[in-house]
Image (cartoon, rainbow, N blue to C red; front, side, top):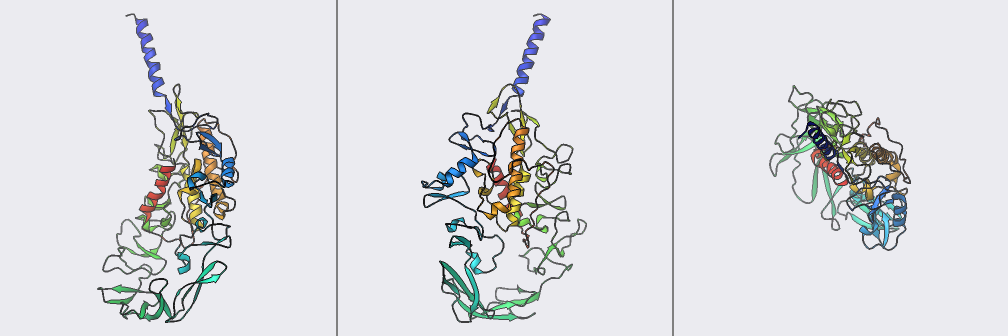
Length: 460
């Protein structure tokens, strides 16, 4: 075989190899595609319905005016329920208009009273909490009673008593204030012993307990609540280490962003599921700006930690069936399912601005759900919900980030979305931090972080 023939064969093999290497498969579609498979994803402002991309605002209005639904699935959008054969928006906060109790959102903060435990109800077309009064005397019933206007009021015990028993048959029993060193163990059903302010009822056996002082600032403490030596810190303090070199624990102010920590529970706002202890600093997940130091993608607002250990923008990076995008991006093939002649580009999933929406909702005192933010049928706009209007800026950041990431990846998508701006995002944006007033720290960080990350995984 001649040298020319060998060269020709080698060149052809090289071309075939390049073609295979650069092939691209994706489920991201531009809205002009005539057929979208059920698993396919349309751009932001569009919804995959009946195997084609439908403009979100048009389809949303159509479903809002529909009076023929049988189940919530007929309403398509996760933010709607079928109520009396009409697709009805969910997620109305106290004071918002409503037609059903199921629309009303309760706060995830500790309830101020028994009535709030039942959550807000739709009363006279407004989401409202039941009434609450502390007026019943010892020996009287403590219970819900009708208070007119389709509402109820819970009549609780005055300061002399404590409500005891099963709701509906409860009575006010005498409250006894125990001082330091006095017995606080349960003795009978006619009274309730409560330690005075600043004291803790410490049990030494099933029947023996004494009121002891809670631990003051900078004093030694035991973290484990199941330890026989456990006594809590005074309100507002937590038991934690203050340095890596000293493993002892003392009662300290809870750490805020950028401050020293050992574990997540040392940090404020861990109940949000968005705050963790990273390299001994309290940080928001997906919170570090471009150029900031990182070790993992989950640290970066862009969801991409480069090989240089810096948060970087992954949008537009090349990808193919053999070259994957970072975990915070997906490979786009120019808005088509398959590209066999060239590779694709990475489109960011916008985890940073997704967490911004969750943080904004958390700061309103509400626990976010997957139905409140996402792509496709989980896009959410409701001008009659104060949850949406008060977090409009965060929603605009998220949706405009998705628009920009798809365009940067070569998907020429267009179309407006009523209620939000699709041009308000910048890769240099700062993260919205969970900062709810009096938000409790919690050891539930592992479970809650998993829940939020699970939502991300199911949406993208």
